[in-house]
Length: 441
Image 1 (cartoon, rainbow, N blue to C red):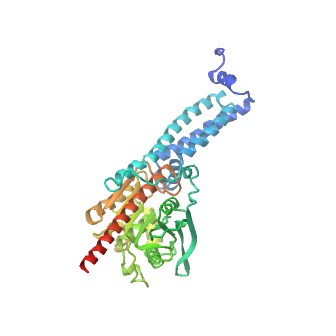
Image 2: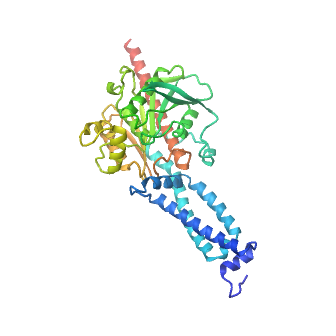
Image 3: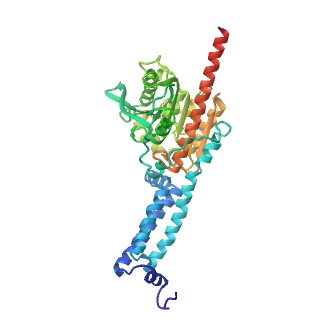
């Protein structure tokens, strides 16, 4: 096919392959495509290098988080919109052709985001190398990736809004996730703690992909709420989590769980609280009115947590310390009462009897600096007899596991393998102790 010399290439191709449309429609389509492609490129660029300046860090986080974890969905809807605008004649004008180039760049970057999420499986395997077998990892159904905001699984039974504590005029509630099929042997338990900077958040919003996957593979999960600031002052949040641990242990027979093995997990503020709960087992100061209750946990999986309230590396920023920690969470000034901030820092509470940890963090986290996760793991490995495993996820932003994505499903599969391994060790040790007792007898 040849085009007359006076015709532009875009006009020639459009006349040949695209149904003719009124010129004003094609102009609107071309500029809509260009404008949309430039906006999309800004989102993708921010996802690749998230904004870290104080003014843009929060909106930059939300934009990068949704772009990174929904990269495949972005590719699909962009392809549909692009095809529609081309059918409307967008390629008749140079603006449309420029937009195609921008879109092509976007798609390359989105594909790389999708690829980094899929490679999370390799990261989790390396983190658990020598501990967990390479084969036989239970998988999350592929359908959960297609419908990322519908993580519930048919084989899982969820019971909502069970009151586990009444404190300060507040009824604290939890949701229970357990296998729908009855099982004879008691099951291990896990407590999930939501994030939200200690001031917002709810059990209905976070931890759902993990709890559904664990319940589908023989665990009982408890997704808990706790008192929030500014009404609550630390350590109120931690006290509530310990009350939840005690409640789960007290109700072990009712939910057919093994009270000798309870794990704890959570993201962001929940990562902070899960780490702190694991490191302060049975500390009476954090158990007012239930000092004799057993609040120990046998494994901890904090995810993108905050591990240092003293901000020794000066990475959290003065606004976060002054406006969030001092004014709302601690109700104290760091300069005059530093000991309170030290006591609230998991990094300063590490000890030799800490339970086994699997710490997970993304290397693009703009809300909880990954450097503190590295320090925390170093401290655990140097002091804890149980040691620590660490998975630093390339390309992952804060809150990456809130809904099902390629990165999320591979992370929860790895967590299940880690916890199953720890429970197997726990059962083996318990059996050995029982046999030893029989031998002595």
